[in-house]
Length: 257
Ligand SMILES: CSCCC(=O)C(=O)COP(=O)(O)O
Ligand SMILES: [Mg+2]
Image 1 (cartoon, rainbow, N blue to C red):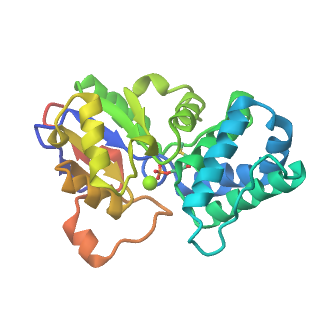
Image 2 (cartoon, rainbow, N blue to C red; image 1 turned 60 degrees about the horizontal axis):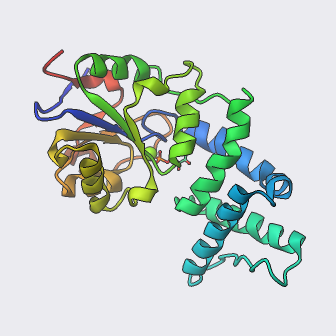
């Protein structure tokens, strides 16, 4: 087994979810299909609620920003539009964004609100790789703080950790970040995360499956390791040479343990 040593200055482990703690297949085959199958009915049922209207406003604003992109579906204003036409426009916009695996805050916020019903009713349980929970417990025992940074909304992250096949493991996580702090491929996001935690960027070790995210974090002086899991996108030879790679969290060696 290859072992990657965690630098002594690291006090915080920052985890990505999809492809890092959780199989991409769970996201692609369970979480995302749930949205596609239920979005129209969800909008029809919840349309008059404030939360749903806030989600639609955010999606409309995003559609305006996306106006230059091929295939984008605009969302008309409520006044003067037929309700069913407007709902269909939101559905089409959500489908369009999901077909491009967009990580916009607007899409992620609606998805989080929709998953809530499924998780809280026990109809869906989040999957974690078997090494994740034991490693997080070990790190915490060694005095590390463990945070999540995912494109999935903080609300959705809490649903996953609160309703998993391993039970409610939310208490293992010290805090959550999503794209409201900035996108994962922008180095400024990692500086803001360090500020928010109250540490230096080089006190953080970020684990992710996406090298663009690893590169942005590294630019901010965050330590990174790229996580290679079954079903993840392949890495180039250069990426394999450049980054510390782990296939399991058990391959991380903490000097203090
Ligand atoms: C609460 S995570 C749900 C999955 C998701 O929507 C997503 O975009 C995952 O992205 P990540 O940044 O964790 O790779
Ligand atoms: Mg990921």
